[in-house]
Length: 337
Image (cartoon, rainbow, N blue to C red; front, side):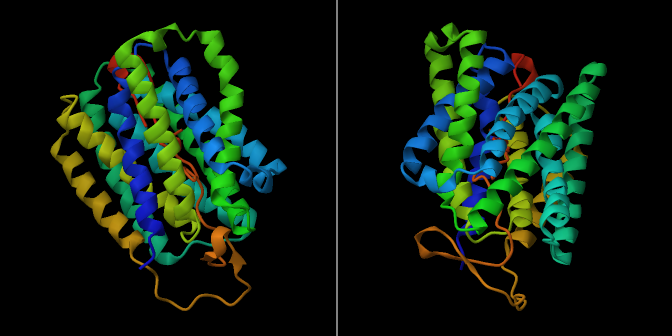
């Protein structure tokens, strides 16, 4: 059995824990996103080592800028909407944008099963939003602007996921692609972190939380995501990444004391079933065509594998793509992916 889908789900689970960790940070959403990317990106670049050279291209460099932009959109969105709603909208819209971009840019038409399962998963996410909206009463315009920012983040996530998947399908090492995307994003965000101030990192709990966000919910998660992309089509991986909002919602319920309406519980169940359907290997004959070798000699199908690699990377930094999220009560924005 292929382990690619399991690696993607593992990455999504780590992204989903970012919101709870973010509650321990008193910094604003921009500083938090910058610190997370600087730490996680530096680690991914070090792990990639010399393989980064094989992954550098105009496409991956542009995707690195998209990773940084996604983090800013995601954290700002979650700061306005709360953990569950912001994460669900940003990550829930990712599979739709990813499937459409793959089809429009690279003629990678998603399968009918993917379309059905993704539609069901998005319906489950919508149910989560309904329940989350009931608990977010009083946010008014903040909720509207937060949802719009989350949708923008979902589109950006899809772009860098498809870009990373394309690079991996053409033979670039997955570790190198993640190193370029997140190492490049770290370079972009380092001046931002210095501009916003890094004194808050001296606080013990804040420092530990940011280390977790950088090492676990960014570096480790995108390492797993990149490995998963070697054998998992990008549209499939983006749908599997919907495990992130489910984890975020459950942690919000158990750890943060947030409440979910009965319809939200039904949405979680529908989402879980949809993820299982997508994760089951497709046993239909594959279309003929040359296979593209991936790193370490692992075969990949003619379909474009998913990215971050993360998210690729969505993730999300988020989600997330970098897909993780931060509760609105902390004033921070996720993912996270």
